[in-house]
Image (spheres, rainbow, N blue to C red):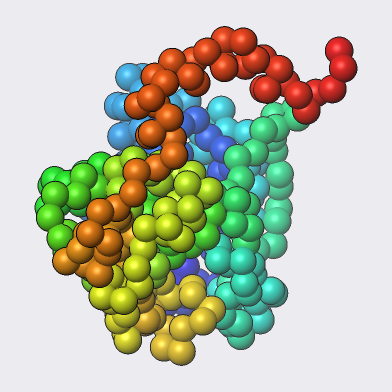
Length: 297
């Protein structure tokens, strides 16, 4: 739109594709390489991934070809010489984003859709968890390459900025070393907590219990005054900069201000003394325990 504006054009034609097939959806949000004559055709790449051509149709009010199997197409015109103040925009962290005085806006010219369309939504402005498994997998792979002790990795999108990592700890200082590495290098990481490998990093109750029972704050954390960070953080004084904290919440060894002997958990002692205890309870009362909320019948 900026390029069209610079050429002196007054209106930009736009078609918004909502919920196409997964191949088009993935390619549309991915970086594409340049071909000899400029950008490659994203629809061709999507067709290659799908193993067949992507069926397209012409829009009703412009000449764009759009995926025929999308759930909805919104067509419109953007006046390039009429910028207006942006309305309140709920950002991913649950707070209003930066107020902008001049933004493009869309005059809708047509809406076409399936009967009863299914629209995928990331629920912007609500901390319900974003679809970021692929991005997390890549970060997990790179983290494990640099730190083989890492067992699991969970950037908790329900609360942007929290990173939980479990490790197979083999030496003192290892937990804080890995926590620091993530806080220093990862753009999104604001509060990084490293835990032992017996903790499920996706289980909030287990994570909080481990922090409360295993972590000695003195000597096992590092606070950074300023690091590159998420520009949407409403607490930041400088956009794109934030203070951060790295926490080692593994069982603290004596060299880390921990006890000479760290006690075993109640569960591990029970399993050592009665290995079949949980299985026996589950076999006898499992259904009752699982269904007790349902009530009679």
